[in-house]
Image (cartoon, rainbow, N blue to C red; front, side):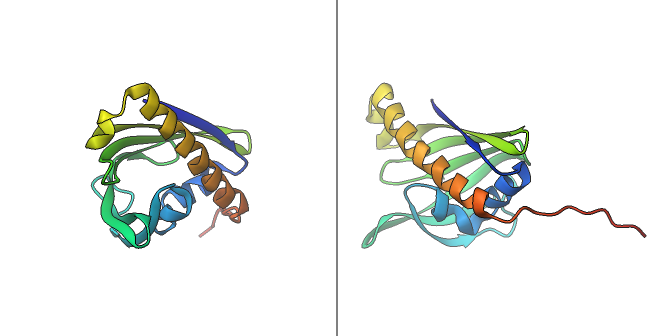
Length: 153
């Protein structure tokens, strides 16, 4: 497994606003070119993002599905990325004052990606996830913070 961590200078709920917006997926996930559809129940377990990977004109349709979710703590996904295969992806978050520590742990679970020796595979995944977290940070750090107010009856 490859784990990459970054401190994002945004509140945890703002980071999760990006993570739970399935339509923003190709903006921060390296390799995802476009989203074709997002299940209405995203990010509930079993929900899927229907995306394409690659670059035009060589786009392949695939999906990423939620395995488990604990809002503002953990999002576990099965990411499709043929022709490389599928991967297990676990995104964890924790508060660090007014910032958020985000970690991505990932490894191939099926397909030709498993033929790549683990040290080489993990190096490539790590490099990709450095950029993935950089993109996530750019989105979250520039998103207006959600204001939570109490209402009285």
